Length: 69
Image (cartoon, rainbow, N blue to C red; front, side, top):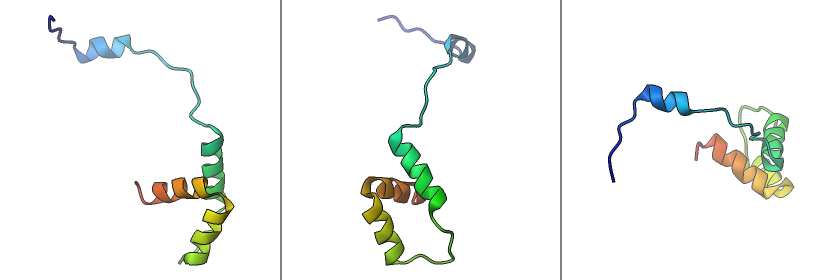
């Protein structure tokens, strides 16, 4: 196989926009949970339990975002 070296300009000129939306039902639920969660100086187990019991998958994603996992 012959090696071909591309320049940054060649790569950039070949790029084109991709029409898509990143918002699916799960991301909408996560953003809603984040915006509805009260801002408090301290959170306890009841706060965590409330999120998990309301929607486990949404809560886990929210926790991962907060903890940058």
